[in-house]
Image (cartoon, rainbow, N blue to C red; front, side, top):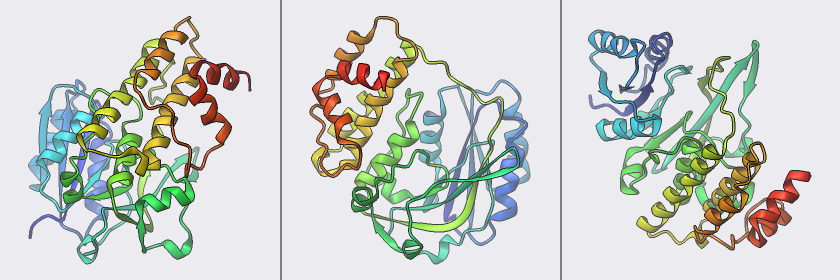
Length: 316
């Protein structure tokens, strides 16, 4: 039987977690045939050895060892290797928690969104969603859903994608982007997709680790965040996207610019005018606010002047 689902797991220095992650897939997914693709992203803690051990036990596990290039590069490599009809991304320290029957879902939807959850100090934390009970299991229009609800998804985990949809639209992760790569990917999925489906099943468990990286804002990190606008601009150009037809992409651009300025407020070092010039160089202004469900005065401020936006938001 050909694999219906390809599960792509980037691995970087998570030797103590990878077996538990893989076992959660094996123990829960029973109805759908699948392959697991482990991308060892230059680990130095023995994670690669653990991946090879798992591949020796389970014939449906593939392992690719590569130099450390980041999670986006690892996911893209996995996409190139995948043979399944559907794609699922799993972080190596998270778990899958229920079965899914994709073989029975012959619907022409571009992606499925499932429930994700986590525990913090033994307290269950569910992800917030904008889906009514009436919309569960129904085909939903991508663009109109954002216009109606403002739903802006920041993670690919807990989402299952049609591989044909990803390949036909050349949807890949922005390599070199160190922050917000999932949000950018999901925004383009909503912009280029026709329809999706929400399934009210607790499918994905996020492992909240106390020693997870906490990044201190710096001017170099602020400029790195702005580099994601280069990827967005190039993607819009190569895909021949008319941004006026996709409010979610306009909101994405607004979010990156506003978050960049807010982050800069934590490391104010005299680079504000240089950052403002960099923002203006992308030619995204004015950002059309129609159909975007946010406070209008903020985006008007940003269109008027990124510097004015920075100072007014900073004192609020």
